[in-house]
Image 1 (cartoon, one colour):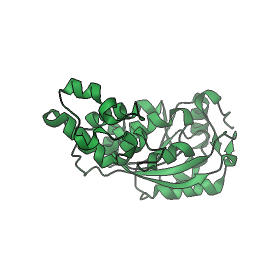
Image 2 (cartoon, rainbow, N blue to C red; image 1 turned 90 degrees about the horizontal axis):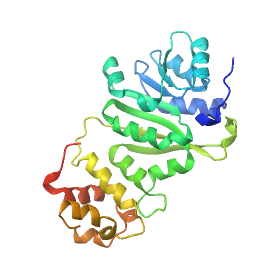
Image 3 (cartoon, one colour; image 1 turned 90 degrees about the vertical axis):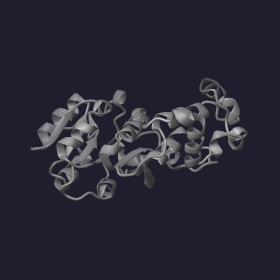
Image 4 (tube, rainbow, N blue to C red; image 1 turned 180 degrees about the horizontal axis):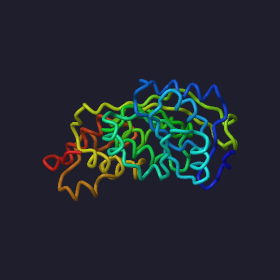
Length: 262
C-alpha cells in the first residue's frame, strides 16, 4: 500500500535513502530518547527512526497516511491529528524528559509549525526539520541581509538554529518547484530569558511591519500607547540592521516597568 501525495496538504514524499540517513543521523538523540516525527506521510523517515528509537511517536493529519502507517508498522504510536494542535507539554510530561522532533514540513504551514516549536521550547531539546531552502536561509540570516526578518530574530533569540545541508527537489515524489534544506534547532530549557517573549514579538512584528521605515516611524504607535519614546540610538535605524540582542534591548527600553515574564 502506498499513499497518494495530496496537493492540499502540501505533501512531497522523500524517496532518497542517502538524504533520509543524513536527517536521521542529525537527530543525534540517545536510543532511549522520546522522538516525535511530524508529518511522516508514507513513512520514509519513520522506518529508520523507529529502528533507532522504539518509543517513536508520529503525528499525521492525513487519513490515508495514518491507515498506511498503522498497517506498515507494528507497535508505533501514531497520533492522528494536526501538529498545530499537539500538546507538547503533555507529551513531554508523559515521557519525563525533553523531546526530540524531526520532520519534513509541508511548505504551506512551515512558519506556523516553527513558531509552535519555539512556543514549546521548554519541552523540546532538539528539532531537525526540512523546509523550503528560502525559509531556512531566513531563519539563519544575519542583520543587514535582505532575508533577515521576523523569523530570523524570534528563532535566534529562542533557539540556536543551524542550516545543516541543502536538499535537491529531485529527491521527492512529486517533485516540488523549489529547493529544500534541513536545519537544526537546539533549545536550552535551563536558560533564563531577560525579556518578555510576548513583548519582544510585538516589537519585532511592529518594526518589520514597515521594514523600510526608520524605527521612530514604525514604532510610533506603540510608543504612543506605552507613553514612552524610542531611545535615540534606535530612532533612525531600520529594523533589518538590528541584531536579535539589540531587539531585546529595545523591547526592554520601550516596556520598562511594564516588562512581563514570558
